[in-house]
Image (cartoon, rainbow, N blue to C red; front, side, top):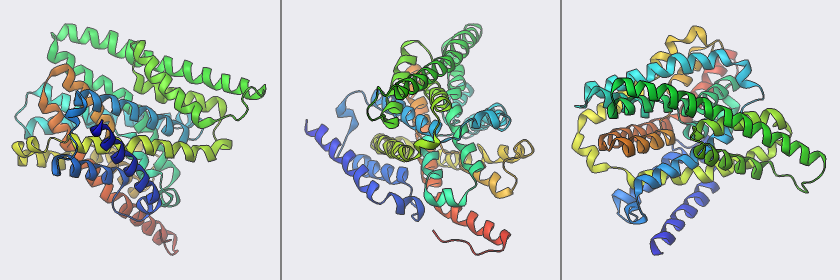
Length: 416
């Protein structure tokens, strides 16, 4: 109980303290909220050894399930933040990002891992798949501050949010393929991947999400119209929907992460979001409450000694992934992304493709299925590098973008 109470103090104190200063951190500080939470975990875990997740139970399972829950809440917040019919209007750009850029990110990350570390090609491709998805939780912290909203175009922010929401679920295809090839013959692996992973888990997850989101939206409208709800709460409804779909999709053998995002989109198409904007702000607060502890938990579990044992190749890999995993391919696809007309818009989307909670979830899933510790060691270092690099560069980038826009328009840049 002492360990539990200490963890409650850390989590409650963290959310409370960072919540008090959230506006300053998001708009002026070079340190992001996820980065501060991560640093606290590193300090209390590997640094001072005050908290040890191994004492709480099977720590890999704890992190996997905590990441899954955090993703569900974060994905629902992303789905509700997007304008209505956004996916329908911008499907071409999303198809390019998901159908072209995302596979190239996987191949590039896998090849970097294979070339820099002494691991088999299938294992390298598995690590590359784990760190491929753009994380919606970290991305939300980059695009939701007042400075970002005032400075960055809506197209930039919405496209990053939509991509991160969808590719978290689709990354399951990339992660499962090398896992199946490692554990089975090629024929058996491909048959399972097509019939179970693609059809049942991915397509099935989309169907579950559509049905649950549409049904919940219609039910909410019906209850509101007949005044069966005394004080309708958009917030409690969406959180409950996220948890319902996450658990229900898992029980049905489908992809719960993708199903939650699809359910959020379907739900918002039915009930609308503009008139509920005030509660959307509360939704972001709840998202922050759920997301910050996961980064502290990650810091507590960080395999620092294993990072040191792998040495400089792992450090070079982290830098290589940051520079070559995404940025070159976004510029390569620039002609198919008319929403990003300027070079600085391409730079924003290409640089800010953070690796975070989704990679934690897939790393734990891959570790559980393959029993290959190197997957967690390498992926966790890339996650750390991404949180640090993107956390430190977010505010300076927003200010730089504002100055560039002001100079182009011939007006003085506003100060944030």
